[in-house]
Length: 396
Ligand SMILES: *Cc1c(COP(=O)(O)O)cnc(C)c1O
Image 1 (spheres, rainbow, N blue to C red):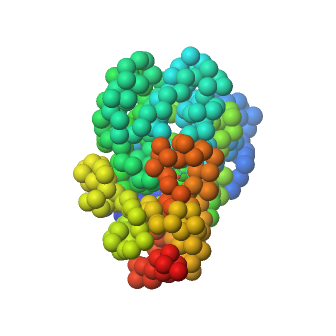
Image 2 (cartoon, rainbow, N blue to C red):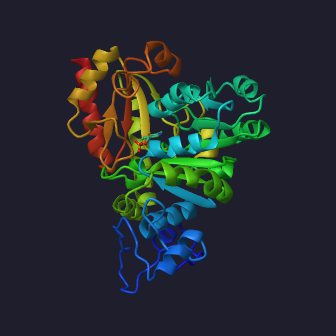
Image 3 (tube, protein in one colour):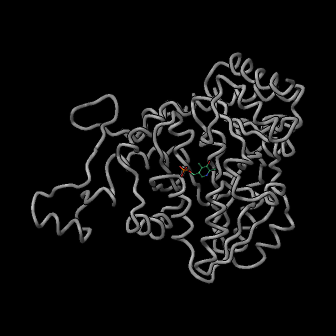
């Protein structure tokens, strides 16, 4: 059934683009198969010439991964989608399929670690110029985009300090330089922010995060214009083998059924936790895009539908304080993953951002006392009691 007359996102995610087999299953079927068979040699030949539409091989296409692609494209209002083995598979394929030697790429400085590595280390190896810009420095964006540019990559809110970047304004600058604007929308999730409506051309996801949201599988997605997806990205992912397992696609389809419910509940919890921590003794600084004291609060309100599920804060006492806080937690687990139904906290300076070096961390505002908290689906009352344990440990 491909009706598109439903108004609510929950209904649409449960019913739109869902196809049933002749068995009439309630839950979507999973096609866990690497290959497909043909009725005749003629049908096989016609499939390869393109005269007949038939699945060939799961690296090229599979009914379950296709279902996920249709569902995600529907969710974002995108013309097309390709799913990949991981979020980094999505980012690397989107960029590498698009650029060639001699091109330039402009990126925001505050990027997920592996995204930063691709732009800073991999692209120059292939003769692609890479330029980093501080997210809120518009002169720097304008200067960097005063020359023809192939792609702009940004992340908002950013990892880990939750800077909010003006996507619409950067989109204008990117387009005037002839660039495709690619937005890593992982921290906001598909429910919290609509980059295409703000002028972005391509959206990148780690489906590992909120879309699965239950800590089970890795996956990625690229959404964008049909022509670019079909002519630029798809030949790249098909031939380089960046394919998502149909099993993982099926798990992610189940995740999508509850995505808005989960993200809304996580954002409500995150807002409660942020309000509690912001005024607590021992907290030096706190960032939550949904709070009025966030440096880009007004922009966050305009650009996002909620404050998101991530909270960043700095505790007193530097690294020692941060470790004491983390080690005192009994409910919130220490983990560098995020977007999970279970609350997870990490110390970026010694984990996710260990490799970027002290100087770059200072530039990104990642202090030794900084903690990144991914707020899950536990009850806020229990989360707050647990965070109080962390605060008590600071006093000890
Ligand atoms: C996790 C993450 C990625 C990478 O996704 P994987 O599924 O781990 O490969 C990229 N960008 C951001 C912002 C992320 O949080």
